[in-house]
Image (cartoon, rainbow, N blue to C red; front, side, top):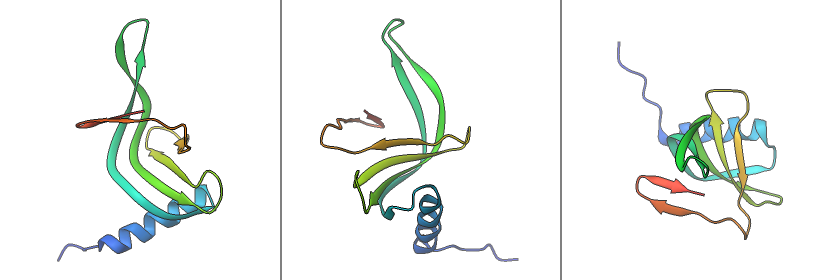
Length: 100
């Protein structure tokens, strides 16, 4: 039996529908990563600690404020990570990491 091939556009449309179920104001996906893991820096121990968040990351465009946000569809719990992208948002890219 031949493997089922799903086009990138079909994957994108399916992901958009899933995101719209969590936030009806989402109108588009402007970026994504297949798999991310969230770490938080502990200033006391001066070490990175793994949080209970990992899954697919999406940068979503919304029809209302905030007009963009980062969403990690968390595979570890029902609680997804959602970060509004406002003018105060800061991040650094340090391959292969995104720090914010």
